[in-house]
Image 1 (spheres, helix red, strand yellow):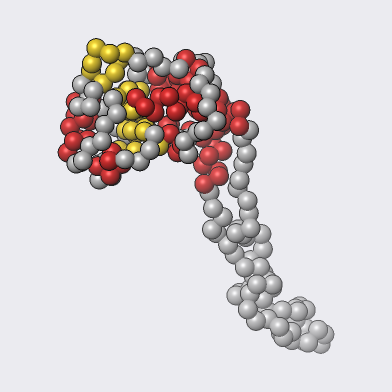
Image 2 (cartoon, rainbow, N blue to C red):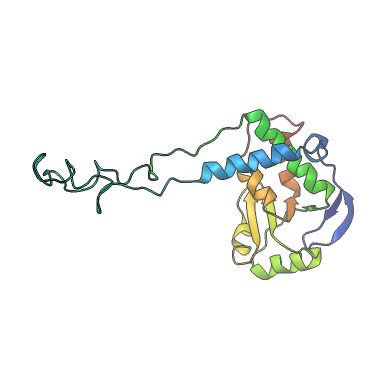
Amino acid sequence: MNLFDKKGKKTEKKVKLDAKVFKTTVNEDLISLAVHVYLQNQRQANAHTKDRSDVRGGGKKPWRQKGTGRARHGSSRSPIWTGGGVTFGPTNERNYKKKLNKKAVKESIRSVLSKKNQAGEIIVMEDFKPEKTKGVEKILENLKLEGKTSFVQVEEEGLHKAATNIQDVKVIRVGELNIYNIVNSKNLVILESALNEISKRWGEAKNKKITK
């Protein structure tokens, strides 16, 4: 793959991508499942209704049991009364969490990175530390990228601060890379030093000390 310099221009140098990460078989079903699990795990059970035991009041029996000609009632907070509790309403105790085993998570990352590589949506750049936003904007202009773009780096450095105010541009550390932010980005611009870390996590390279 071609290597781009710090200004976003193509150089004569080439970089070798880990075949296990960027050139593997694409499993569309697994990618879809991994995205679904990720989104479910971000979901919070905020909606909550009170049942009859949670509603304030209703301790006194509305009227006596017999002799009134009306139906018997034990509490004015019954679900059939106005101001009463809610039956079968949403509760904040609901758990939306889902699990996907580690092997499947790794394979989904490999699949989506391979898919992006096949589509020509991955660019590898030399490491750089821009001091101003204009520098990042100039790089994007030189690369001729359209749509959401994510820069992938090893650690947060000047790039993160310089790109904060640019619309549709994110800076992600390798340790933060997940199935959703890859799918949600049209283009991935990977800094050269990050390639080795990606290979350690999901490819051929082996290293117990993984960047978080």
